[in-house]
Amino acid sequence: MELTDREVAEAAIKSGAGNVDEIMQKMAEHKGCETNSDGGKKASCGTEAGENDLPPEIWEKVKNHPCYSEEAHHHYARMHVAVAPACNIQCNYCNRKYDCANESRPGVVSERLTPEQAAKKVLAVASTIPQMTVLGIAGPGDPLANPEKTFKTFDLISKTAPDIKLCLSTNGLTLPDHVETIARYNVDHVTITVNMVDPEVGAKIYPWIFYKHKRYTGVEAARILTERQMQGLEMLTERGILSKINSVMIPGINDEHLKEVNKAVKGRGAFLHNIMPLISAAEHGTVFGLTGQRGPTAQELKRLQDSCEGEMNMMRHCRQCRADAVGLLGEDRSAEFTTEKIMEMDVNYDLATRQAYQARVEEERNAVAGAKANELQILAGEDSDIKILVAVATKGSGRINEHFGHASEFQIYELSTGKGAHFIGHRRVDLYCQGGYGEEDALETVIRAIKDCHAVFVAKIGGCPKKDLAAAGIEAIDEFAHEFIEKSAITYFKRYLEGVKDGSITHVDKGDAEIRPGEVAVDVVNETVAAE
Amino acid sequence: MALKIAASCVNCSACEAECPNEAISAGDGIYVIDPAKCTECIGFHDDPQCALVCPIEETCVIDDSYPRYQAA
Ligand code: SF4
Ligand code: SF4
Ligand code: SF4
Image 1 (cartoon, helix red, strand yellow):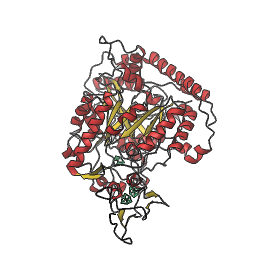
Image 2 (image 1 turned 30 degrees about the horizontal axis):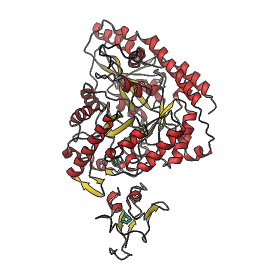
Image 3 (image 1 turned 90 degrees about the horizontal axis):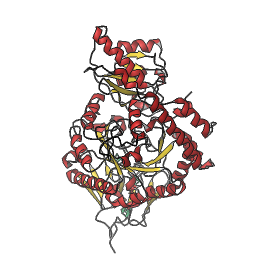
């Protein structure tokens, strides 16, 4: 790294960031979120414009957490360390040759670390990337099936880098046994993967569990698992430890049932529910891959997320990070921090620099909020039932700043007169499994991933792809290059609505799209460093 | 009398922690069971723990080259 921390910070400030949702959040946050008469709750502070309010103490905990706050993930980074290889259950969407499929995309094997190596890696990364604020342990197996390694790692880090937040993800089977320890290490975020609350459904997802020295199968296994998960969740809630629920949406098995899961976990105090698509292909070697179980389409996933959104905060920006991911969400710098490189590094953990940097990030967030608060006004007076999706090529910072051909993923926004530009998720378009998709034409892949969108916003695009996109009914728009996403999208939408009104545009409903999660190229440049 | 670990082992380490006899360790490429320490879990559990927790079927298996263990 040639840049000093200060230069990195300057670059980040210059790059600007933000979007309408963020701004609403930020403003509410800025006012201390006490604008509501009830005082104890606040509006618009949810991670995802949820109808449900988050209590201030929870917002305080999650506002800088890139995995839990949609806004923060533009500014703060997280890392995972792969210290936990063992697992105690079997999931039909997992192939244990690879990382835990609950938390990681299949087909990726993390470099396994000892707790000592992991602690050194965390310090090295935190010193190089001052916006790294969160350390997670998510695998490659189940962190709580490896309690010694997991808690030893937390112990080392809490001593050397006490400002870093700790979190872990678990299948929940042994969670009740470890809640005390989790509380002791001040772990404030726990993710539990809950795919069912009905053992009959669970039996189709989990062939067996290993519990108290016995192997249980079928409905009995699923009953024990769900009881332990719910007990663990309740215990976390009692102790004020935040819990997020991950669910894997498996069409025909638990898709409708996840609405019940949503109610069950909400009732037990979970603050966020992240419904992820099943990623399934025969070459993954999983049971579901081999039986041909399909994953949901983009619209199926969105419909389910929408129907749960009224119930609680839904998380839509999750990119299903791998167990040794490093960096801002959507990028992975883990190649810079291999064990070999870390062990050679002379790590100097500088808390003051980190705090100074993070203070600048906060200033930036506030400035953006102040400058852009009136953007929703663009749509004032418009009232229409039309909702359209648009895809955006961005390197982050809330701007349309990526070339079409370089984008490894697109951010998807839903445009409506009610909500303006509403972020609903990401679509990956990079090749996540070389063997499986290598021969596919790259442009075809992109079109399939965003074909439910009316337009794609890019910083730049060539003539040929533009034509092919147009043939697929997707307008490529580069006139908003390097501008803020929301403002551009809303401006476009207003124009679209006017076109529909005067008859120059015929509104058509677009179909569905494919979900193709994949791995972000490891050499993606840190967005804050790269920003001009 | 012992179990052994087949080449299909994926090095997940799950068996290591479950063995009541500390018979299992990371070996050269895959995990290995020390036949001198393995009791097939007799005296501790009803079934061999390594075989129950192992995510890969037919990986922790009886090694026929040793006589079956007899409880003391
Ligand atoms: S909990 Fe994770 S590692 Fe364990 S079987 Fe399920 S997906 Fe695989
Ligand atoms: S059978 Fe029991 S004693 Fe033998 S290696 Fe497996 S766990 Fe250890
Ligand atoms: S549990 Fe099975 S796969 Fe895992 S290390 Fe032991 S023998 Fe290998």
